[in-house]
Length: 391
View 1 (cartoon, rainbow, N blue to C red):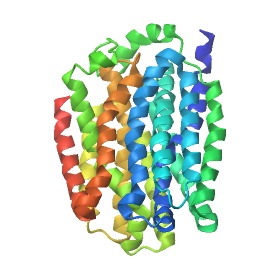
View 2: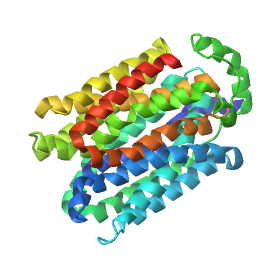
View 3: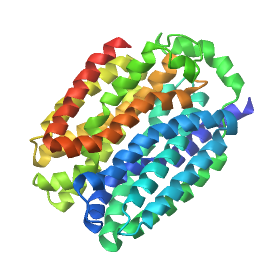
View 4: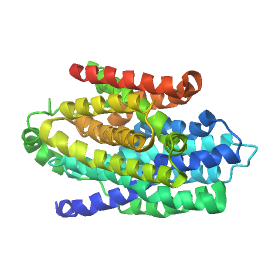
């Protein structure tokens, strides 16, 4: 059991590598440059973001599947390689082939990123069955920190060197950080066996059973569909707002510098949500935390339809904080309901609804326009709030 002494090193390494999976959050500064340089519509220039979010869910499920065949380390490395190849293709996309950005950044980036991310969260969870919420908050929280650090860097290089240089720079940075996956090790099976009894008690009675559901078994339960749908209903608010935060902020009376500052504040709020929500779920339970988040998201996204200036920044920050909380708390909820053994693939299956809704959001924006889309997102949050009573 000597390896257990190294679990904090595993947590630190997984968190550092997870920095690269903040890749969707840089698109809010890339979007106006891509729209201008490639002469695209708002919806078309937002499409790579909605695709990477949507395909990311499929990548999560593939990652969980490959874990049981290749092991966590190899799966993370394979996913990281696919992601970096995709970003490279997006970085060299000719101006008459903008679809390469959606294929590279969106499809390949989403598949590879999701594949690696699912295990960078699941592996530390397995090492810390006694602190699952806190550890999930740390590993997922670093993803939010990525946006805070990368957005100003990308904004500077976009303004000085343009889109192609900036995307290739991102690719190199991410490729270097992904090398940390060589040091990832899975928790020994006896750790889970030894801690299974104490885990059941330490989760304050919220673990329904020690049974370890396979994905097929999980998908036969009503709880799976309820959780998947409820999680998906939180997504439109964020997916509709995120790629437009900077450009929409400037439309609402902010200068370029103020809009970028607003993006930074929203990124910090995302981080707060990622750390705070799972920590609170350890104390109060996932259901209560999720209900509060959905109520906040509903009020905020509806307010964005008319908000200007500082109020606009506050509301987009609340939407981002809720999103950070949602992607941090739901992995904990899934592991509580269905066990840790197949967590990577199980959470990927739960995220299928999340991915489908993400892809549909770009079409919603095109068909309904901004204001009506935000109203629809608010209604979705309300339905999700009611749906928490079913699991």
